[in-house]
Image (cartoon, rainbow, N blue to C red):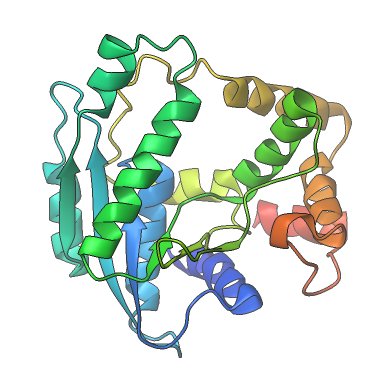
Length: 255
């Protein structure tokens, strides 16, 4: 697939740095139908051909139950990539918006989706779940925890869920969102716009906008925050190699 070289370089470095994959792992890629998860799917499908640690791959979509959802374009992409695809029907949207009428639905929704994805992965014989969180997600999550919970924390690059017997990995940890967006547009990934009523109206979106504004006056802010997370070993982060200088990062972004 064209335009994937840069995507693969970010993904492979994260897999290598954190030892995310063990020989024989069967990995379920959580595919929400957004640009992040579809980019992850393409990267993992391509890496499967030559990565020195052999692994199997399946794609899993949790159908939230929104009316009119159509995952057939995702199914066609998976067929092209030779990745088995499974859509898991749920009534999560009905429970959250119709039954419980949640005013702040994101936390409960995420918890229910995670549970459904983990159950599906186990039923499909997977021992690993790959999630599409990227570099910007990590920085935003850290800042959200700092601002709204008063704690230093983030999701982990690798998480072992011993109770359910699953390993969660985030292979796009080093990948800036702009590279994800560029790739998704260039190869015309079949991105499905989220039908969720809360989409785009969340604390995360507010933090994204805040960081964007702050970086206009503080060039490289996100990279410095990420470097602090690594040096502080926040929730499994670690500085594998010394952080590159800002100038090197900017040069890479402009290529």
